[in-house]
Image (cartoon, rainbow, N blue to C red; front, side, top):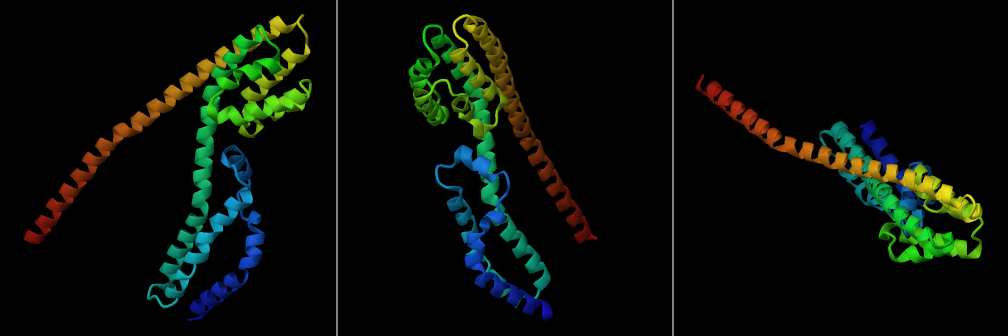
Length: 251
């Protein structure tokens, strides 16, 4: 009885603390959520965090029915696990989608960089980026547009280059942006050597990205190939259990 009363008190206190909890939801948000949200989100992260809490406010009242359940302890464990999972699920989906976007950028950026290298032979960095806007992949378009706007204001500012797509946290992108800055600032004497270094590095990166993409596809089909085996095993186990039960019934 004491446990049921304690659960009721916890539920009442939880309801009363709703305003405070909603103001301080950042305390329970995962530390890497801002990074994933910066990659995918177009709205403030506070709105996403607030939306995560709303289902908990509705489902928690199931605890009232648990207080009168015959299996009180088990129901408390099940409902508590469900509440935790409901709160964690949006974060897991966000992280999965963001990592998928990072993989896409890792694959598409070296292809885009190759287009820049062709245009750089006859244009400045700023003009090259402007001409490349028609070819930039959609998932990188906003970042490249912002880079172009910043470079029009000050093409010699290193921060503009380093800030481009920094939320993806890809060393290859950072290195490429440093090369573009050097190409813009070192002058024509060393430009050709720098250009060749960029081509060599991009070739290695592009080859590695293609190999990783093929490996991911192979792993996916390997797991898909195990599904028929799992189905056959399940059917075999079911058949054996059926035979065993029939033997026990005859005995």
